[in-house]
Image 1 (tube, rainbow, N blue to C red):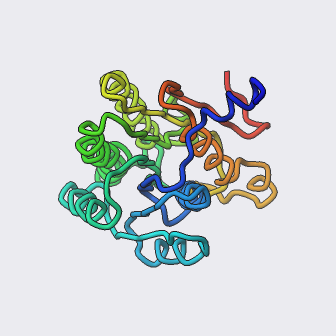
Image 2: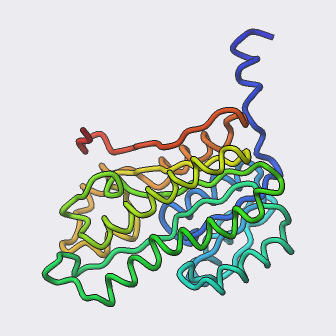
Length: 254
């Protein structure tokens, strides 16, 4: 076997791994669920809209099938129920992807309603905390696991287009993931924050101005981010990617 083949052989086989994708009914979460399932993972997806979850699961025709469970990540009791269901249906959790997220149309500070601020922070930041807390309780005893947080480049630097609530929520997710990753690496658990630039997902419907189709075609596509998640998940246990920035070619990042 050549040196290159030996290095390739150290990558993890994802077949049979248990993966939970939050926000798995659309956009990046949907693409991640399909990609992990395509690698042989036993995948469960969760989100607020049952119909979208069921459509996502039905669209995957491989084996094993994708399982679905309705859950609002901002509801801590619902998250506990989700993880109890996961324990029963699939067993020990290996991979969790936090991809649940929202933004709002009236997002400038002058327009921002306090209730909308609370909702964005509850889903994007507290929701990530709720799910990470539950996942870590299950990963620590096994001294292994991977958590991937789908943040945003608006979670590394404030962007006017994203709005104060979204930026604040994604900065919180970034800090949460980084701090937890520093703590949990001693337990064999890896945490990765992914920071996508503009991605062609349904959240674009919440832009204050409609996005032209030609612009959507130039953006990252959900499958691009999903490919990054798969690559990270396949790394051997000793290799960690704390953070990854991915943008469309046109988008400046400096």
